[in-house]
Image (cartoon, rainbow, N blue to C red; front, top):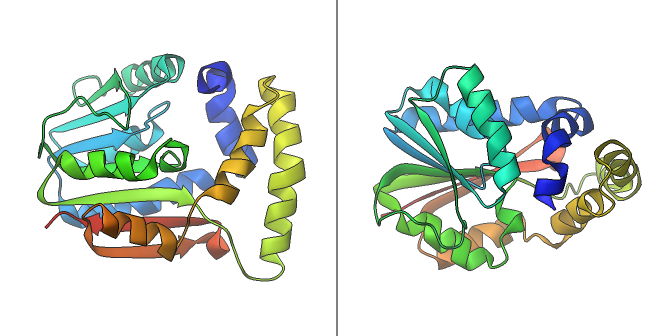
Length: 222
């Protein structure tokens, strides 16, 4: 599905979010700044937007992993155009069976990817496994607003407007129907924090952005 929409993925992300997705990623990167990581793993990297944004952190190495080759191909082109080839490497891989050694990264991060895990606990456990001791996880993900009338407007947009525009522009009938369904089923907020804690993360926190439309989650490997 993601290979099918790769050619329009970046445009639709920016268009359907009215450009706010740039701000969301910037907020996540700003949270990572204090960590001063040398090695970063971007899980479910897609076309590499979060990995590219993390370049401002001046780490030694950023690695992005994703299962969709067509998405990665676009990401590599963007990285090359920005002359970041020596800093960012994108590799094909399964986020729930990461091909990296234990305790190899200072930071693991993901933007709008963890809700696509087939097994959420397994994916988070892998992100925990490859973290160094005292390393941190940072996750940016859609959540479900509860405030009136934001909640009602949000779900109307997600259920009717977004799938229509997504199908029209991408040509894929299922991808942008899948998006609201995946957000609806995702255990956001404190429920997600509990899953993080179950797989071992400590000092966990959640911060909502843009009236609860997205959330930033943090956790630490003790």
